[in-house]
Length: 523
Ligand code: NAD
Image (cartoon, rainbow, N blue to C red; front, side, top):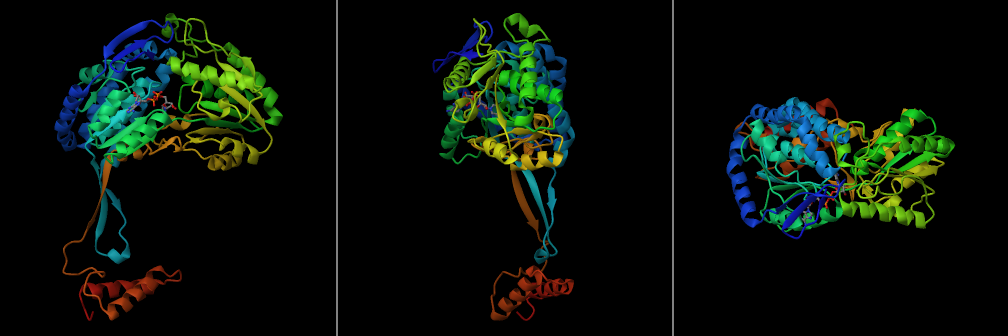
């Protein structure tokens, strides 16, 4: 879906037929102020709900998505140009899966979290209260428009926050999320949508949300962080990637080729964790390459709007025309520097569909191996040694995901640990994202902050620490008055507690001395 936008008008077009689907005016300051006011008004009511009540609201969303999956997929594929199958698995199924897991998991995460209290604080207890932050701003990209809009918003809501979410102007799915929220019976105003591009996004930051959850490009991530820093608003940044996939010599060729194919071409390579570069051990390079090329040539691509209705089409279109230009530029740069196209390499005339492409004779002087391509292009490089391939995999400003393929699970684990990324799948790709219990996020220029797993809800919380003394008559050992005797005693306590050879007797003595200090005996 393409947006030909002035600062005010958003025009949404089909990436397959290039016709305009609809157009609208971006939201401005007045509507944003109103939305934020409503969010601030409703937030205390969300906070007052029990965890179970919040979960019950979220379950309504899931029920609605399940019941209306086909019409939701219609809207997703029309604007993204992705294949129907991709929309089903990575948006509809994923939303339901995450909600189902968090139906139970959220209960545990929202409870007070008890933590141990050390001996020096004997008699006291400690815990952490996950409390909401207030109003969360979620800003999302165009590649998974429903999933990226719903899931962080749901986590923020479960944490007790009100949410304002701005979908990408490229795939706004205008009205879709409102429809889900209203018709499912979700709490009014708890999650609100604002439409527009970067000016609208910028105005939203000026409304001073209590946290920003941003998913998008590194370039925009930098701007958002800079802007947020003016108000010291905390940010989570889920940014781009250049995932490496490493295949060793002992793999099942057929399974691995199929897995690589999906990892590289799902959502036409427009996933932040798509395989963007493949390193194959020299000894199986020809065999695996032949199989990958053979399978790639069999893939069916979306070439008309009718194909968006079919469930036997594999690879969709490139959603944004500006992304298509980047893909073509990366391929051109690679060819100029000596790369060879084994299949694909061009767009289907009259569409934004780029044929699934396999490139060889590539190296790290080329953009295709170093910059985020975000398209259905798989550059493949042979390697000789484990040490060499780890070095190449880490030769990137990005650190989002990656994969290692080998029957030797010790080796796979060793390489996974050596990869400087936030996520690694072993003998699959992107599969960490299929488990909502695992945290998701990147390192280096792929951003920071984690969501999903335990962080899903806690990233949207003030994790408030509390330590309770029962209001005894004892004073704390570090309180006044100070005296040489007390100083000496504290030294003894330090030795008893922390010197490696400490004996239980010492620990007991410490407890007794602390007790004496507390009672102000002699000291
Ligand atoms: P983008 O950065 O261009 O836009 C993302 C969002 O930011 C849009 O909603 C846009 O309107 C908004 N925006 C742009 N400028 C802004 C500003 N100055 N202030 C406030 N908001 C602003 O990204 P995109 O092209 O939509 O998405 C593709 C990128 O997203 C790729 O780099 C991809 O790797 C990344 N991505 C990352 C993840 C992840 O979880 N790490 C997931 C999906 C996509």
